[in-house]
Image (cartoon, rainbow, N blue to C red):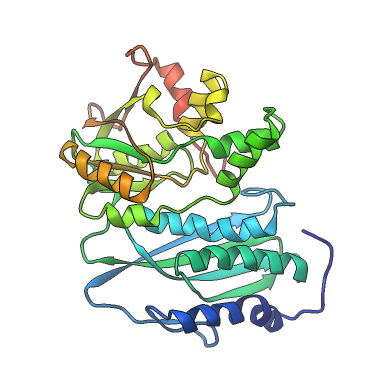
Length: 340
């Protein structure tokens, strides 16, 4: 964080960088928010035909982002990862709260952070409705609220035998960008700029999640790695899966790397914030239409199978149609662990 500080107090900070912009959003489009920042609680008006989806994510300096991270990008990503969770369940954003611990009340940093935060908040009509600030190590915690028609939430537990397994967009670019920034891999400047945005400013697939209501049987967002996250669906649904390695969608930039790097980053890289979902094979035409309507690639990468043992398994099929052995598969199935 930049060293420039100010004499801002807590309430001056909230008013200058957060409350005013929140009020402007609500004045133009209040939606379900009856009252936002300014009292002990926010008030949301709930349609009796809707259910409320609630999600929280915490970003910690040095753990989830570099200590010198661009604050504008950080503001965007802090909300994006929560909106991605809402997208996975088919929820429409209603609003969010922000809890922010800061080493110092740095006006330059706060100006940039709030700019990125409200850029994505405005894009997805998701106003800031409350929160808290305090002094401490840099830590950002957001809780987001969304609405879903009753009984239409897309859960992890709904995968059925013979379902197709799909993934949106392309995966692996965020991990490739991280490798480049850590100097583990050398990338051309233009290539790094293309994929760095995928790492720092992911796009929540809100429209896709809403379109998949009534079509997808299960879904989640890809935060810790495609195949590792897929295991959550399989565990909660009591199923196995068969995945075709060559079908996992990769960007042109990632495809410039060796096959080993391509497969590893796409399979378990994490930080992609695409959606992985399952649907009956009879829904393929509907999914193809959604892909065209949203101008978003949707790729069928495998099939849900009945569970053969006491724990879910993912069988990975290589380009030659052969199943990878357990040692090869384990390298692709590892995902990010916050305590590892």
